[in-house]
Image (tube, rainbow, N blue to C red; front, side, top):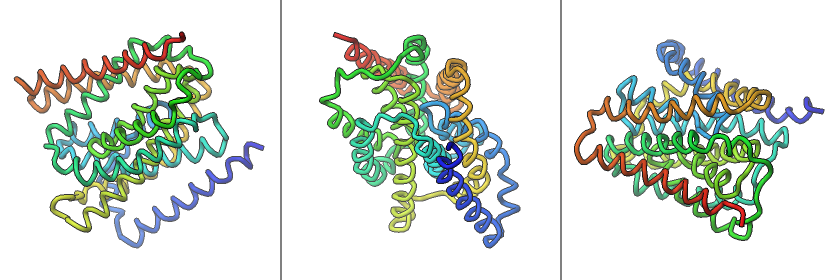
Length: 327
């Protein structure tokens, strides 16, 4: 029975690898792809994170490219969207094929909101955000997310089912999540998955077995919309909406890894406790904030603003948590 359920996933993998091999072979990209092996290695971890946590593969890919390899934040963003369009889509097909529980009531309006917010963010926000603030926005969002997890870990892991308290507001809440999350993702390449996940676990007290698959599917959809919108905008105005050629080279190297790695992460985490993985990734989210501050030499007003922004985000999470308390 499971074998029959997985047929769409196996078909997807077959189609993807046929296309990938064709791109390598007919484009004569073997040498260039092999030269980018470090990102493929990094995305081995990134793809596991993407499939087993509410954090997209760009959570690893972005800091590796922009902090370790000293590349522009826009490149990290576009790579994150491009690679998640394979890894997160792969994990989503695996999740849907096995009919895993998903919070469709919140997800459907969030998908609609993302379809509006992501293109608007890509066209009117992302190109005008300075490179340093792309990096800081990423660092701030994920540091606050890591802190929230550390503070609420026991309750998050112990949640069962899903609260019905805010059910009558799920359409409007979902639309807001999709719209705002789409704008955040258009700037950093990730973020909408964290927003829907935080809403589910804090406001709706949702079981992680429901919240994480939901966040994976929303991030997959947003990544596909984001990278195709960016490609379309780049063809219209290559200067304003530039996509660095290194995005494609890194994508070719990492895509075959994440196509299997993300669904493998979703499978492994169903067999073991989520706590160790969530603790490790949460600590990495906090560490990358300090890494960004040190690497970019952030000081003065920018440093103060970044720290305040982290506190504000943590405060928003705490507010959601209080709203989600049973009456």
